[in-house]
Image 1 (cartoon, rainbow, N blue to C red):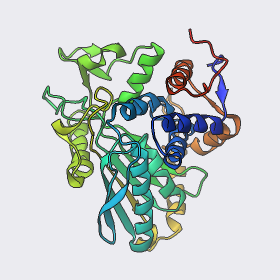
Image 2: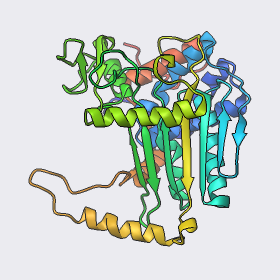
Image 3: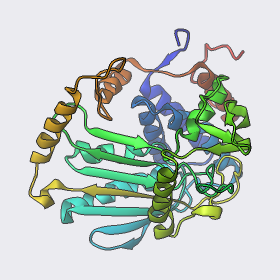
Length: 357
């Protein structure tokens, strides 16, 4: 990483917005999506940040994603709603769902907002961290944007990585933010290893012969493995029901591989939830109580050979601020890819001094 260039957050956001604009995305939408994509890198979710720009541009160029959607509320009650993303960039529908869920939680104690006709929207942490920062609890989940997993004991690819995320406020500097795929590894991690020319560890994927796959270039030849075997499979199905079926979105064989197919609508399903502790009589006391338990866990003596106990989200606030102040240092392969995308979009390269070799 020593020879990787650093780029200011504002400059990277501006580049991403201009690239999206070159594919017909209106200026305001492009700026919003670019900010969220860069925010993913700021918080360390590099597999779901600007790394995904090539995929988004391909779908915009192929007509599979609507460059200028009319994101709207399709169904609504006092505590629930369904957002129709109009097949636009997923960040637009999910940010609308997050904001509406928070609004409803403030009014009624809970807000649950589903999304249909969405698209890939980056890491779910983007849509639960704001709840915790506002003193609320958050949850979000999504049907994966491609099927890479068979039902437990089967061989047909009918499930995606189907991620889920939780957040909770804390009295300390870092809210609790837990964002995970229901597979041992997210496909985004495998794609970044492929871009960097690195192998993947055993245990992430197996071939149809049941033997480990470690070459990311052969990812289409095998399966991603669910966490915890049948338990991860069951959790993935539950997420598919709540994020897909409940919203009238794709699940099972209806899921479109958004990387291989750049022309078809994906109808990606997601949901965002916000929960206000005030509705349970706790108010600001929730963060204090959670912090006390978190501190007990951090104080637990580590086992031999283990690092001190950390909670999901620990250290991310300070690390994010450092990146905002000092800029982002992306992988060299990604920097080169962004320069190539700039040429494709006929805009200025974000890393003009970088050699292409």
